[in-house]
Amino acid sequence: MLQAQGMRLDVVPVTIARQNCSIFWEETTRTAVVIDPGGEVPHILEKIRQNDLKVEMILLTHGHFDHVGGAHDLREILSQKQREVVPVIGPAQADDFLLQGVEEQVKLFGAPDQNLKNVKVDRYLSGGEILEGAGRVFKVIIVTGHTPGHVAFFDEANKTLLAGDTLFAGTIGRTDFPYGNHDLLVREIKTKIFPLGDDIIVLPGHGRPTKIGIEKQSNPFLT
Image 1 (cartoon, rainbow, N blue to C red):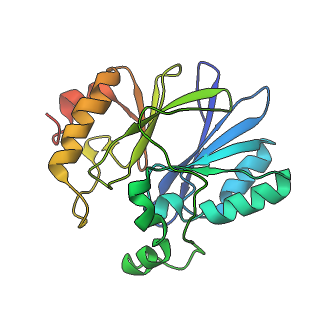
Image 2 (image 1 turned 135 degrees about the horizontal axis):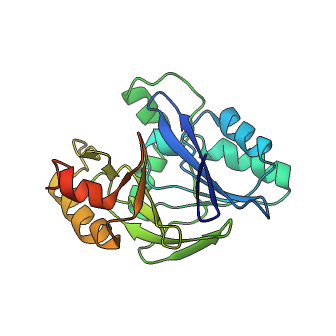
């Protein structure tokens, strides 16, 4: 569990891609926000149960199966348990075709059946929106190139960016999909992520955390 300035964050690696499902939560109220529940829903639920959390919303950065495949079941189970609808929010609408094609993606990538399902979100996001949950304030930043509707969530107070599959430690997101665009992704990172500040912690969709300043200086795709 990562902690900074009162923030509580558990990271649960899920699916064959070991995608970082993030659970932000507030210790006093025990309220939580789940970001990118890609699969292995029982593991995510167990972490929620261990900390006795009430999930306020589920956020999605983009439509790839390893980030969203568990969102349908997680919403259904939590909504029944908490006796109120837990909304699934994001990404931008341009990723709708991916959300509706999760089951096809699983076949394409040869992933074993982990009960991953297509996702119908409660609403899509636009750049500049502000979301509040679990004592956190997230600014929505659209960062395209990996997918056309990819968003990142910036928690300015805690100097933390949930980057999804845009920026990683030492690399950037894949752009070899038919809808990917390498030059666009590089430009989006440089113009939308870099200006957030060198000391911002980047929590990527896979792998270890990094900082913007480190990637500005040493990331071979961005220097």
